[in-house]
Amino acid sequence: MRVDSEPRVWSVGALCLAIADTLNARFNPVAVKGEISGFARAASGHCYFNLKDDSGQIRCAMFKRAASALGFVPRDGELVEVRGKLGVYEARGDLQLVVDSMQRAGQGDLFAQFLKLKASLEAEGLFDPSRKQNIPTQPRAIGLITSLGAAALHDVASALQRRVPHIPVILAPASVQGANAPLELLRALQQLVVWQGPPTKASPQGMAVDVILLVRGGGSMEDLWAFNDESLVRAVASCPIPVVSGVGHETDFTLADFAADLRAPTPTAAAEMVATERAQLLGELDARQEELASALNFTVDRMNQRLDWIAGRLGRPSSRLNDQTRRLSRISQAMQFGLKGQVQRNQQKLQRLAESLPRSRQHKLNDAHQQLENFATRLGLLDPHLVLDRGYAWLTDDTGQALTKVGSFQSDQRVTATLSDGKVQLKVQS
Image (cartoon, rainbow, N blue to C red; front, side, top):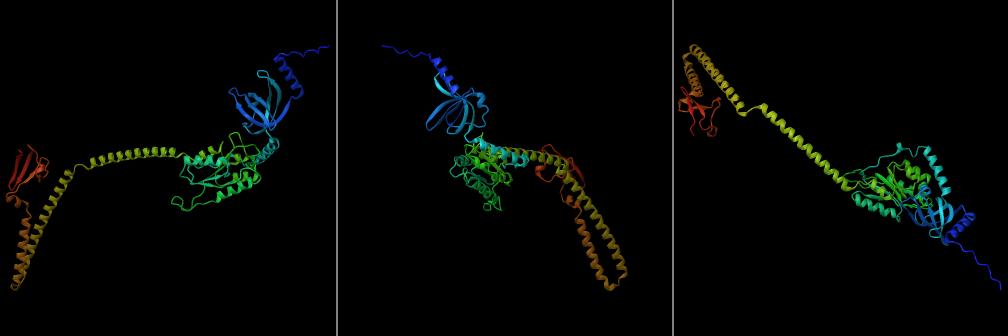
């Protein structure tokens, strides 16, 4: 009876190495197309994921050096093409594909078209920063272009409602993916340019859109291709209203991003860029109010200081009153002298007339003489000494100011009393 030869006994490590050598000789380098699953980036910078399709999956590792050269952020569910080497991870005995490069599936042709059109439009100056318009911080109305079924619509609406619920949002719906998307996006942009709301106090001519958000969520290059349409890109660049592009994720770029006046990394970020939060505006308003109050108080203090200076120049009212009193006295004396002179002249004239008039007109002379005596009597009544003769006195203080009220006197005050025949010095006892 013949006994068959026994199979070779391998150590685990040696068997893994032998399998790795066989895989390397048979397959490597290898290119594989599949869907990403379980993508994770370690703290070291290495990336780990599974590549799968309907009939199988394989573990993949992409080390830091290769991962740093990626032009996009891989996501679960994304269809990609990878190049690398098959091997065996001895620690677990797993079949593993070490990935050297990765690109989105079908990206090669599309990416070449993208670069070609980008270079052409850039040469025309379509992406020149000098063409960019400033984004208003307080728009009267915000235009929004996206799909009604897009998650971006909910994200943008939520952000705007939270930050600026008082600013109206005008939605111009359009497909953001597919063959009809470029034309629908272009029509939506044109609708917002000519849109005008009803007149208001703030906008008597009607409200207009002051900024436009062009947004959609992330996706593959094929998904975002509508935003690379040349007609749409030219319309965005020439739009009279500032356009903010929020297409895809931070690592996604479209030609509409370059043509827009501002590019946001995400749709939510686009909404935040055109909507200064109400709380921030209220805080700024409070600060302005404090500045205004401070300026107003300073102005009032300066005016009070000026008023004090003017009051000091005007002097005390009593001094001005004394000046007026003295001026009135001089005028009174001048009037008395004037009346006496007039009386004397009238008497002389009357005497001359009496001598020249016949006796038949003597009674007229008597009337005139009587009138003259009346004038003389009235003139005498104006003499202030007649008042003093009746027992009255004129009281003045040390400065010569007249004392006419009880409240003007003080205890031990020196007072001068002017009587009809002279002056007497008095002292107030109580």
